[in-house]
Image 1 (cartoon, chains in turn purple, green):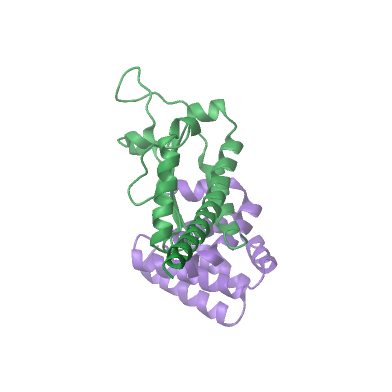
Image 2: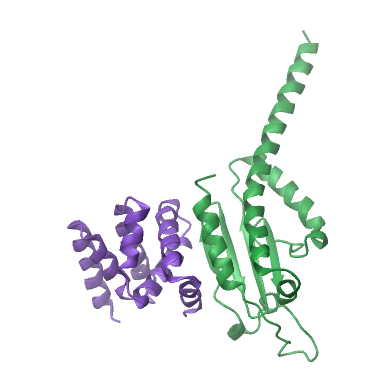
Length: 118
Length: 168
């Protein structure tokens, strides 16, 4: 995937999130996996955290996660682990909630696929 | 406790997913069986390390391989007293590592304590219970450090009051 495609994706996520279409924003954020470019990868993680930050309750997060396809779940789990490795308390707190909801829906297999991906 | 619960749940799920170990003899040395995560020369047998952080100063590292898993923890230390207490507490535990089976005598650099779980441990012990032990250990370490800190402050206050009182 090209840098331009990822930037278009990030723009689309912020537009969707700005219009409070959070389910669609989450799907868009999880559509593409993490890229090689580190700065762009951080922006992808921030986009996911931005969407999650607007989901106030655990039920809202669970509803958002339940609308995802299996590939999107795996991508989202990869972003969760990338975000958790950044040692930022502001990122970690919402990502733990997403991790819980994703694990409940997709099971341990999602974690294994996310962790084993190169 | 509620604030640490999501962190511990994440660690629990990740350990359950990565603690799938099997016997795997060494590819380099005949008739030897080494924990591949410690040996570290066979990249194809190891998963990328997973860092799970709660804050900048409280995080853990999970390094998994085909026959072993190493779990290293950096405990939250707010001030110098907590640093000293943590160091002493971890030293106490690591000196008795053989009684705990899965605790490593020396922590990985940058961490307070490390655990090494091999396929032999998962054959003798229940994998869910090992994960339960790790999570409970993380919970209890925080509580123990807080209790010890309170105790030190109380004793210090009592000693100071007595000492300075005798000078009046």
